[in-house]
Image 1 (cartoon, rainbow, N blue to C red):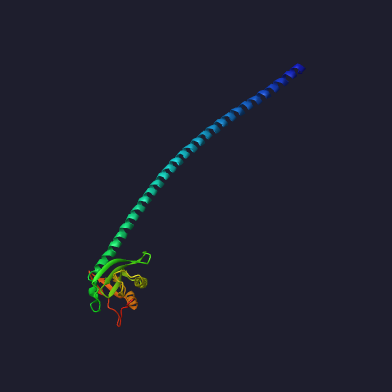
Image 2: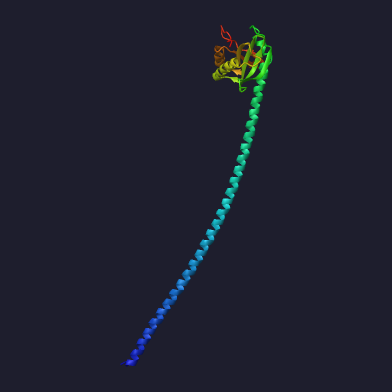
Length: 234
């Protein structure tokens, strides 16, 4: 039979074991917590390092994109410059071609009207028309003249639009109202000429009282007028 002191001693020993067991568990729990915190810290470092690496890659990509955009812009500017230069060259070529056609058509043009009572041996090119305030209204591609008659000739690379004929009708009215010195006091005639001439447009021009001429090689021919054609005197 245990005595009271023995029972008391055993109680304290059991309590101490429980306390030490609790401290042991607490220590293991603290160790696990430390391990988890270190693992978390390691993962965070890896995450921050990967994020920084990706941000650096993104920055490099943005720099490369910016460089490519600058290069694209430079190429576009260079393309615009070439297009502008080409347009000017084409424009100059068109102007030269138009001037060539005018020169070819104007050469000895008066001979094409030998069957008519004209002697249009004087030829002028690019005659400007001024109003009473000395403002340029239009110009005449070729103006033929003699003592009694003057003929305003409108030249087109391709005479294939009836609107060109209509515009020349308006031009004739302006010439009649504001005649240049070479046509002043003379009967005014009109003609349309082209490197190529559409037959329907030629018929429309004749219907408006104009002669029609076409470039054939290096020669100029008078397109056959319809039967009964009478040139209009403005």
